[in-house]
Length: 113
Image 1 (cartoon, rainbow, N blue to C red):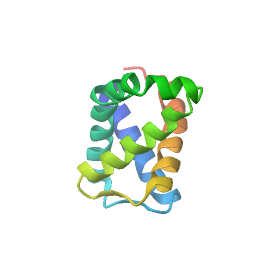
Image 2 (image 1 turned 45 degrees about the horizontal axis):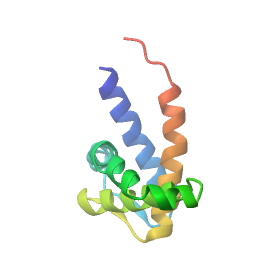
Image 3 (image 1 turned 180 degrees about the vertical axis):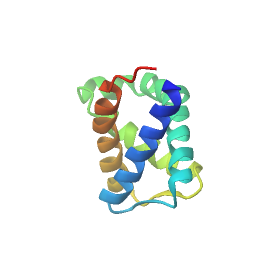
């Protein structure tokens, strides 16, 4: 139940990001649920590999290149998930930044079963 509530919470966060950031659009709530699932899969399987591969440039930029990786993965999720569209790098950058900030707040909510 806890994972389902977090999934729904992240879908609402994605809907909010699409409402706030120009260039990001979500067709409906089901699309936001699919996008949240795709973003979770990308963060679990692809992001660690990319962070390992780009470790030297990440060290040179003192970790700021991670923001670029997050934006590119957000764009990739927009490419993969049907109905979830991200138009351009800067929209993806701002969307990924907002998703990171809002996910910290969402993860700090303690849901008891």
